[in-house]
Image (cartoon, rainbow, N blue to C red; front, side, top):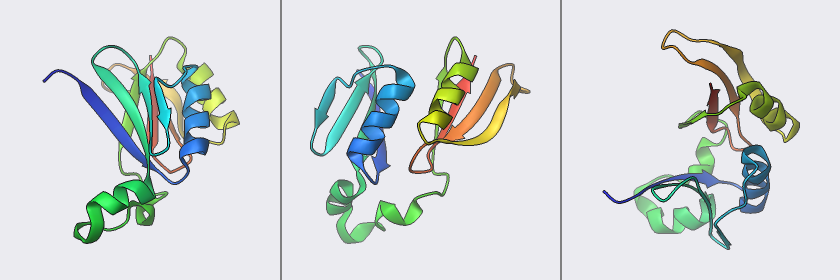
Length: 125
């Protein structure tokens, strides 16, 4: 395996791009109609793809991803230096707080928010 890209299906690519650009304090490495990518390093990227775009590929074999909006479907677990700062920034950008920052059983201090489409973002330190 040479690289990993996690792709979130989003209702509005522009709104989600703006959200993640400001939350992550990072410019997209690719931002064209149909796909936005944020590159963490040479091996890992986060992609944002419009639901309607992937629905054309999935066609009749799978339900339209828009039917799952607001239902937790994945978790993006990000280890950062100041999780509370990211949580508060996310909330200011329209994220919903799910669980406040606290020490967890597995040894990380983690808080949870959901993005504009209901994807769960864990911010850990």
